[in-house]
Image 1 (tube, rainbow, N blue to C red):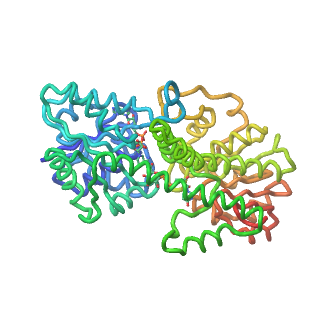
Image 2: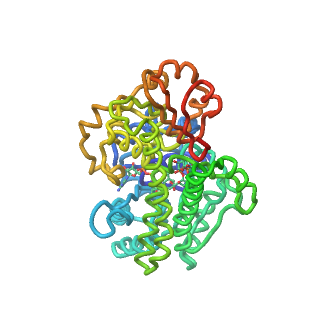
Image 3: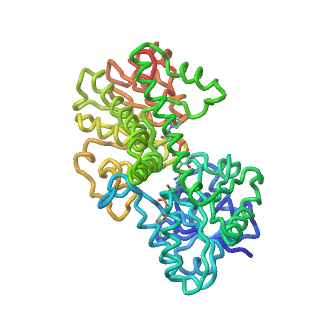
Length: 469
Ligand code: NAD
Ligand code: UGA
């Protein structure tokens, strides 16, 4: 039986390995992590991440050919193929701080693999890493090899949260990069055979190592660039009376452009777009390409602009002050169908409103109060470095309440901000909400989920991204 071990039981490692276990009954999959609570949660009924469809798969495979464990060294030593899916956050200090990827977690995993291995291994980069990382990993492994042979492959992951299981079942493509040597190609074929259990062969692309590593950064940069493009247009729509939904629809009908990923929003969030673009910018700068670096930097700048534009719109509409006013925040996760808050635009919007002394009442379907409070008190880039967790700021705690119902959140509020596109927010009883709010009642839709005309008929003053005021 082929044995796979995945180091890192997070948003990528957990779902990816669960799907491999489901689709490959002949493979034994162990997912290992240094985090004891995370592994305990994977072994319980309350999985550490919320992802539609994941519970059923884990229940079906756990204990059969899928195992979650903190016995990292044991499982690594036994495995034929080792996926490394640890976090690769933005560096917070030292050379490249605020831009470069922090490979501390990756390097410690690689050193551990070198320490405990007693047989040849295929080591797979699943984490998103800077181009040329495989070369560094190869150095660490081969210089400590004790005669063991390692093949490094790049197999970046393209799943999106909220649709991870769907994406893993039917990926647009699986990308595998390896060395162009006979041993390298043998390793590529071994990994290809794993995916071939359920992915059609024509969807499995093989490339050299550097193309695979760079394609992942490129794909995320292109996706984020689309959102910044549509968000930049949304500002122009508001200034001219054009409607961003109509513009997106018309633009997306061009088959060369396509209709997906053209929803204007309060800004993109998530653990990867910003970090991966910053990483790309840093790589360009290090390679003497300042013009290319500036081009990609602009994607982040427009995203920051969109978030602050939203806050400014709220404050200026509400007579230039939100001091002491209750603002209901509907949605805190970075997108619907996830409880993940990493880099969610809600953090910047909430902090902006708190800066103007607003009182916030926050409701999200999946995010816990503890998580919201932690997020609002953390410094930028610290969120993905668990060991550097910052203490909570008392100011943020005092002026924020977290509630478990949209009607409770909006009761007595002066304004509402919709920051996540949860389906529930489309079907709320807005007449009931309006009746229980202070007047004039403002609604700022950062996700374009509400029917603007209907709400205006009820009496709301509505601001929707990129729509006529
Ligand atoms: P995560 O933070 O959810 O999970 C990473 C896990 O690795 C954590 O549980 C951590 O405890 C563990 N870990 C860190 N160092 C370790 C070590 N030395 N030994 C054992 N465990 C260790 O991160 P994630 O969202 O799963 O992302 C992982 C990687 O995948 C990142 O590089 C990210 O860019 C990339 N990625 C993420 C997504 C996504 O949707 N989240 C999608 C595609 C790619
Ligand atoms: C994204 C990519 O879509 C995945 O392919 C990639 O694997 C992943 O990053 C990663 O590397 O981590 P994810 O961040 O989970 O996935 O979610 P997306 O659906 O891409 O949404 C990202 C952000 O953009 C969200 O805040 C979302 O609300 C926003 N968005 C998305 C928009 O504002 N408009 C859109 O049209 C689409």
